[in-house]
Length: 175
View 1 (cartoon, rainbow, N blue to C red):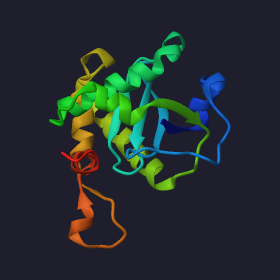
View 2: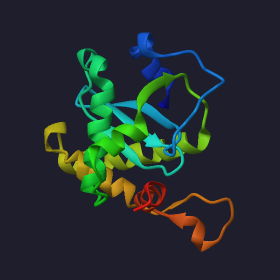
View 3: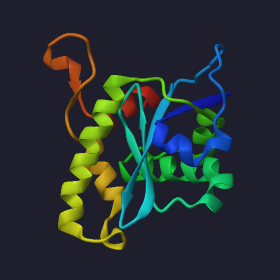
């Protein structure tokens, strides 16, 4: 099984060799597709990766060109670490099985997910002013804060359509 990660054009310029052409036979697991964008903190490249189904975010900090050959392990470890931090303790082998390999694909123009990501980046900018430099920013805690903000995932306007990314991910992973 492969997990598709659709990347923004800015990120695509940095990881051209890893980007695959769009395939029509995308088979996603229960986690579905992810979207990734790049942002900078103290001139260091950071990635904001969010799940399209749940809007659950993971932040990868200080990703260098040398890190790209191990990006699958970095992503899996960050996802597992964030799940543990958010109280969804599971075994790492299950996460590895759910994710499988990563396929980096060009943008899919998912406006809803891009809107959520841009909103989360604004939150990060506010918190950056509070914490200062990258070394002082507790990324797991900040990601947890972003994952605990109420969002609207349904199609209606009912209160039951509002949830948090953490609760949506718990439902998806059957916790």
